[in-house]
Length: 363
Image 1 (cartoon, one colour):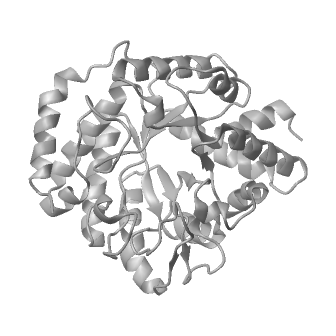
Image 2 (tube, rainbow, N blue to C red):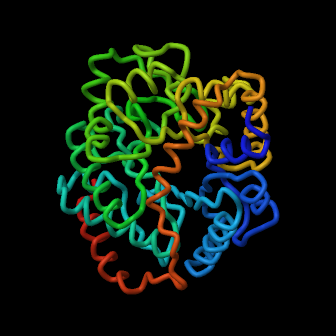
């Protein structure tokens, strides 16, 4: 069996954690130095201005790179445009993705992806939870709506791939979400566990199509949906479904990258699965990374449970090593040379005009 320290290094890479504060605190330092956490997710609570954010990220990366195994952190954020945008002015306030769907222009989607990625890169963010690849098929959906690019799978695929291209060319890692598709739910998984009861053929044609195309176009990280799809698995949401993550995402769609959970503190999970069961359920289903957005104590508890499960044979160490291999392969893209000052000014006017152009297609 691995030593407890190497188990911490392995399991730490599999965790994306939220944290408090606008400067590096002892609590966050503990997560990086002693817990070897592989990635962090930023929220409005971590942001005052671009200069402060870049200093925080520089401090975090310096800490990670001076601590064995000396791997850079994924520094991630939910910055989609519209109502899901953690960074406010002077970052460009882009309108929601549905504007791109209304425009139908791959060029506009590509320019948006590139502009958004440039702004994130300027402050050291290397991973964004975008684009949304859900197809907006249910007008009563309380959580997706205008965050989706369109209500037709081929259009979501076309525009999603253009955004991904803009990101990748700029050096920011895109994350496609929420697999296999959150667009036809009546409930918000932040609050409840939604079900989708459509048949398999329909799910394949609609929900899976944009993800299949994005994978072919080189998408390397996919976030799961906390949603039950009864045609595939009537017991577990996609996040914990071996059928959905292994048989469909890995085997059918040929995805070789990182499978990341949505936030495990959402009520869809919290109310239906005991916390201590999450590591074994997730690894068994095929998760490579587990996300805990708000509670650092839960981050530690999740890691402690994962190590215990490894030591007791409930999780095979080989599966964890395979996940870490995938994570480190994607991390090779992370630029370790961060800017000393954030430069948002040189594109401010161009990006403002781009946002105006997108807004002209508002519904």
